[in-house]
Amino acid sequence: MNSRDLAVTIICSIWLISLIISGLLALAYQNKLVGYKQLKESYKKQIEELQNGYNLVNVEIHHQLKEGEVCHYFAQNQQVYFSVKRKKGSFEAIEANKDYKNYFKAKKLELTTANVYLTNKHVLLEFKDKYLKENIENISIVPYVFFYINSWIDGCEIIVKNQRFLIANNSAELIVAYKKLINRKEEN
Image (cartoon, rainbow, N blue to C red; front, side, top):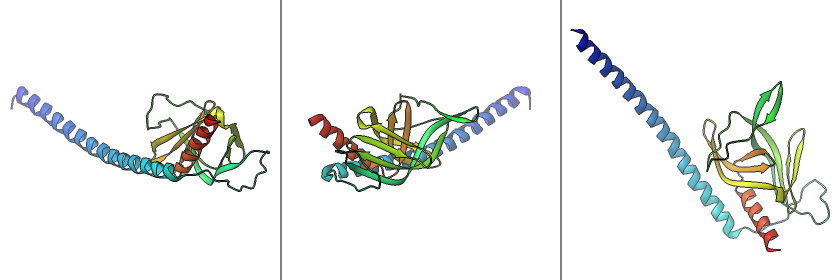
């Protein structure tokens, strides 16, 4: 076997190995993509079904509300992801990429639980040791947000100032209630 035959054998072997590796990666990506498509369709269907027959209802909560303020949505111990980066032992919010469609990607997502309240005037996220209260006109809620952490998770994203909170699972009612409140305010 001369050096030319050896070079051809090595090149063919490298090509074959890279072909096998790329095939396995494509198969793994396809399985991940199928899960995303199924979740996306079921989540959109769930929101569309809720929008058709949803009416804003008053929810009783244990907080004292100001006069004229009514709670329309409450979720206890809701999973909330937010993006953080460590800087000198503390957590500081980082802004996510604004060029995404239905996908959220950050360097690190921190998971916590919070009680989520939506009133006709405010959104309140009540964490274990702190809370965030913001006027409903100063926030944005992005529906149809899907992110991948060992499996696909659906939800919505609440954008308050420069901080983004991802409300995971069971957020369809929050999205519909927010849209109804915004539509009601625009009509008045």
